Length: 114
Ligand code: AMP
Image (cartoon, rainbow, N blue to C red; front, side, top):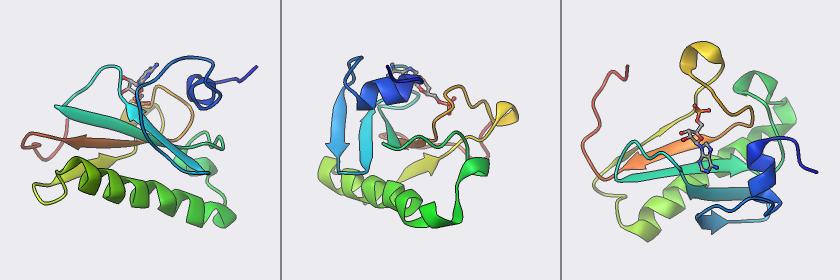
């Protein structure tokens, strides 16, 4: 059995609204969206936090941003703008210990975030 929630989604053990997939990356809609478009982009391979990213995983992490670029283009909000953010650890509010980019779009996004 897979360990964490997102591993279960990768393994199709629990459902998700998947919008993008490559050999190494999966993206699906956040279950509790904070914007009209809120998509999570994850590596299929588990990495717990940014602190756990190995030097050899730079390409894999870069692919998360390529996925954000491609999804923005495919869904038509690339030119309007969007935000990608990754929380790391408790002070940032990380709740799922499998790194994920939040891709937020569809409304003006305030800065600084809370
Ligand atoms: P973070 O706080 O950065 O760890 O973000 C975790 C995100 O995962 C939150 O935005 C949750 O709404 C989202 N989430 C939790 N469970 C699911 C699920 N089963 N499917 C999709 N998104 C989820």
